[in-house]
Length: 207
Image 1: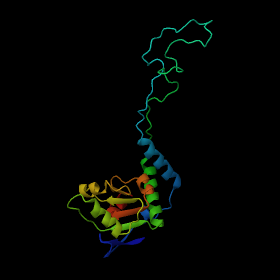
Image 2 (image 1 turned 135 degrees about the vertical axis):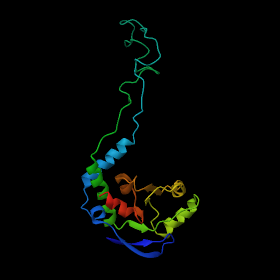
Image 3 (image 1 turned 90 degrees about the vertical axis):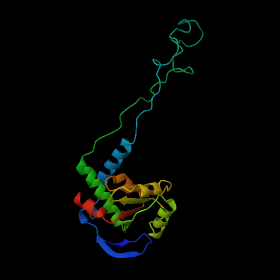
Image 4 (image 1 turned 180 degrees about the horizontal axis):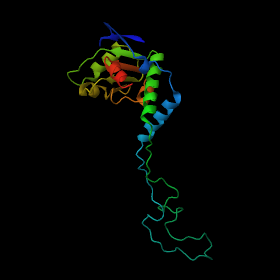
């Protein structure tokens, strides 16, 4: 697949690049994408939710009344879950949500997601650029100039650029990552993919 490299003003730079077939032209594996997205979302969870059961509440264990003859239900203490402030039954406890996925499956999922974007013609090649200072308006102007769309846009950089990253923080629809951080979820969650020229070569080396 051949794409024209655009300048930041939206005009063509005169350079064309060919996307490597083994990265952007494979037969997508939907199940690998599913497994990788599930793992990514699971690994974002901290699992810190915790409630107190009746053994942890700060109430006396004294029996409230006699076992029989009181005219009501029997109770062992104020810690029972039916009382306000009592312990919770079957509440959440801290747990570890992380799971493992083989590197080859993750690579297959990542390349499958990139191939889907190539099939959808949702990839834009942009020549390398720098920003002298964090300017949200300037970055938004670039996104609009290259017609990346008004929905979710993922910009992939060959290497980290603090000014470009800081310029995107107030733009909910724009996400900026480096090629080292690229993942299946970020690719599939974006409507259009903006690759800075050079990213495709790095991905090909890692194929």
